[in-house]
Every structure is written in structure tokens, then in C-alpha cells.
Amino acid sequence: MSNEEFINLAGKIADGTANLTEIALYNLAYETYQQDQQSWKEMGLDPEVLKAESLHKFWREVEPVKPRKIRIWPRMAIAASIMICLGIGLFWYGKISHGPEKLVAENTIVPGGNKAYLTLANGSHIVLSNAAEGRLATEGDVEISKSKEGQIVYSTGNTQKTESLSAYNTIEIPRGGQYQIQLPDGTRVWLNAASRLTYPVSFETRKERIVTLSGEAYFEVAKDKKHPFKVKSQGQEVEVLGTHFNISGYSDEAVIKTTLLEGSVRVSSSQGIGTLKPGEQAIYTPGSKLVIVPADVESAIAWKNGDFSFNKEKLRSVMQKISRWYDVDIEYKENISDYEFTGTVSRFGNVKDVLNLLELTGMVHFKIEGRRIIIMP
Image (tube, rainbow, N blue to C red; front, side, top):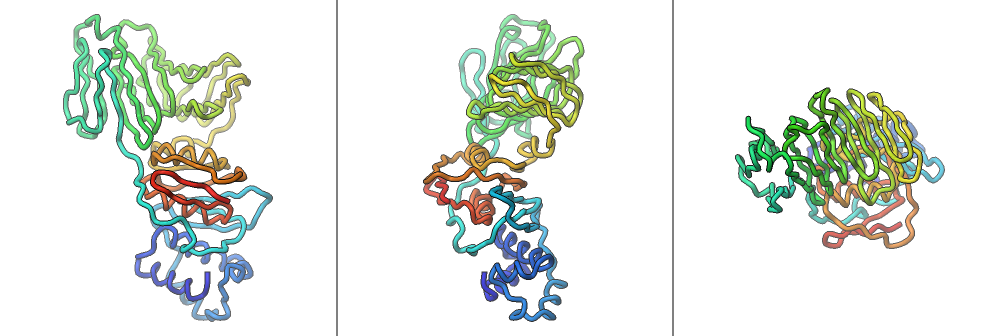
């Protein structure tokens, strides 16, 4: 970045026209100057040219920009691990040798939204994103409706009809989608992209409330001590009475992670059984022993709150999440080192905003062709 480019950038910051990438670059320059002026020079900026007195005046007048969850703190390179913090902050390892003009090209790939397909017991399908508010279907004495907030709700009548007691429904979330559902027992479930949940239309007369999950979901289980709630997912089973927890169990990922926020759950698999306390996470890899570790709860449920959150996460895992949410394909052009990233960024911006910030490390670059993201060193 040249002095002239920085001055132009500062002008955009001052008049509020800067985009996310420009805000990131500005905050990086600000913090680097405050902490290490030599590093500031290495970025191509010269405090002598900009005159120290006027520069200090500028810093007093234009403080670090704080749009929704954006600020940056730079650091120097540490081994081969490149960690960036997006949204909450950017931990910068290495030097930026290119400006915004070299970042990923403009391309409008919008984020995901409320998309889901409901398969009824009789095999009929309902596209929930197109369905109108109100009653969608009736199975036995159970009415399935869509609320004004777009949530699917099951309401059970006073009678117990055979067809509703034995029936199962499946809600499937495509790539680029998410959805919320309230099960017949009152349990609320948030489903992430590329996920599927199968459940009984009615829990009446059942000794256990059993659902099957593929993908990722956050559960707020309705309390019922007489009827344990169980989630089966990729070879493990989670049993609860009433609690809040998140399960990430995608078939294309090596591990299944169960994170407990409130209450107590027991996680069991062929490789072991463990009981979680709030703030703990069970990690299960098929064929390996179940492990319980302290959880990064904020990171685990960030998707539910509208963010991507990475905690020392490998590049390929980061790109899997981007692929699911933006419904894009990922292509690795060459052998790319699996750098680690740490940070948080909103899921509701254009995909280029996320990629631009990843590129600020200088260790990975992207090219967008249609709905395909090409990753290059």
C-alpha cells in the first residue's frame, strides 16, 4: 500500500463509503502504526512522508472503524500457522504485499437463507421456502403449519390416530439454506446448511423421543423426565432430558462434535460413553475413543447466530463451511498448505467479503468462476 493509497483509503473511512476489505486494511494500518512503526514502513507506508504531527491529528479525528463486529489487531509470523480473525479481529501473520486491487474479483454470490424441503409420511414433498403461512398438512391428528416467522410447527390434537403415531417426517436443508422447526413435543431445532432431520410426527405413546440427524443442528429440548430425548448421528447417540446443545455430524467430515450449553447430556458410541457438563464438547471419530474437552461454545453455535467462527481451523474445513452456506463448489488449483485460521465474520455478506479477508494473510488467493471458488497459493 502506498502513501497515496492510504490517504485515499482514509478518505473513504471518513465519509463512510469504505467496504469491508478497505475497513480491514485501514484498521490493520492503524494498529500496526500504534504498535510498531517499523512494520508500518514494511507495509509501504512512511510516517516521515505523512508527517508525524498531522498523522497524530488524523488518528485523533478518525479512530479505528467499528462496523458490525469488525476490527483488526496485527501480529507477526509464527511458524507456518497463519491465523486470521475476521469480524472480531484479524490476527495478521506475515506481510501484506498487495492492495485491494489484487484481492478476489467482484462476483455476486449471495449468502444462504431459509430454504428447506419437508417430506411427509405419505412421500409427498413441500418446498418450505415457497409455502404460504398457515396450515401445510395434516397427518392423523397432527397439524403441520408454517408460522409468520417462517418456522415449522407441529400441533397435536386430543385424539390419538394410528397414522400419526407411527408416521415419520424428514426435513432436509440444501446447501445455501437453514431452517428452524418446532417438533411435536415442543423441542426447537435450528438446522444448518446441508443437514437432514428425521423425526416422529407424534411422540405420544413413545417411551423415548428419538430423532436422527445428518449434518448440524442446535437443539433446545423440551423437558420431559419420563421420555428421554435422543439424537442419533453418524454412529453416536446423544441422550438428554431437557437441555441446549449443538451437534455437528456431517458425513463428509472426520469427526462428530457435540457441544453442551445448558443442562446435561450423555454421549455414547461403540468407542465409549461420556457425560457432558455445560461448556464441554464430546469429539467422536468413528473407530476412535470418544474424547471430552473444554468447548469454545461461542464458536460452536456461531452459525446459529449468523456468523462463521473459526478456532485454529484448517483451510479445507473453513472452505467446507463456505461451500455449504453459499452453495458453491471448491477447487484446489495446486497443493495448498492447510493453514489454520481463527476468527469470526458474518455469514450474511457477499462471499467475496469473506474471501477478501482470508486473502489479507497473503498465504492463499481465490478466483471465482460462476459458482466455483478456485483456491491458489
